[in-house]
Length: 460
Image: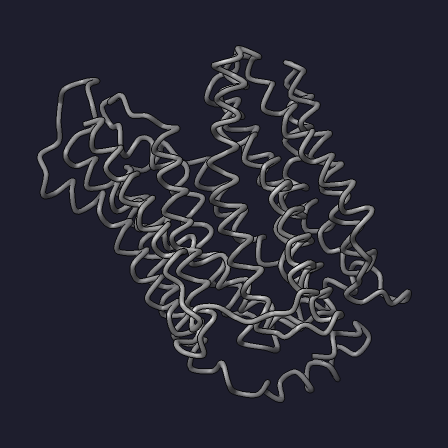
């Protein structure tokens, strides 16, 4: 079965290379040298930030287990991280609009470095503090950097379509190339050099420090709404009014929460799904295969977004439908393929089929990120971009906390079925978004602005 892993990885590698090298002029957008310099600076920083994140991921659970903590204690630590991202992260992330996105990006670096430092202590309270800091950092990573990019891109007068280039390249590099290299580096530090499970966190701190200094000396500050008379509560109310008054923003938030909730649930489920009888599977190699699939998706997204048709709102319906179908495979194989009762051994035939489906899902993830970024840049008002983006993460974090708390309460097929239903719902919501994409904003905004004038909502 080892040949099967190499075959899938090799085919995906060839497909990704062919997709990138075969791009024609139709698939490329002509840009200026000034923009390319700006784009490359952002991609360098973003890659360093993602390296700091990816280095930690594979070793968090392992590190906690080496300190002697069981599944229940570790589960509470993970729940604390997502809960922190939902509560404190939303507040800190929203401050980016008022206090500055560059400051928020630097805060991300400092917060995540402090989180890495806590990993040196085996004390549960210190580790819990580290998870809380990590949750705050995660909210900043997925809001402040994108908010800074969109505002700076527009401030410098670059064409709107050029944003799609930066988005797709950021995902191709940050969620593909960097993820694979970070996995190899982490494996080298822990296994080959025998530096212990804390070594990847120290390496992450180094990358984050380098990125922080690049931000400090090469980025300019930009804001959402720096009005002195707007406190945090007023900012939250304004963002809530913006979501309630514009169906497109509300749909976008629902779509994002449904897809990301399914994606994070998949992260917890793919290992037991492929090894239900403790089969010996190469986790690191499979992870690298998933990242190659994601790279293919982001490369395909850059092609699609470089053209006038199909529109992002149109092809994303297909992406959600395919992702929903791919997560149905564990349910289908449980009915059509007789389950193996033999413990250990290599991956089963059903596992091979599921692995191919999971690769398809990861390709959809690669398509999703740059596409949702492009739609957010179109529909979310600049004045409260970070605030609204963090609002979108609240239902996501609640959902993930519930799944983590009840991960042993439901059969795996039920969990995959739930994710598939969510993705089909996202597909129908995307269809609705496509239908109203070109419609002007309704008059509801004016009425709500008059009723809620003291909240000083956003002028969108």
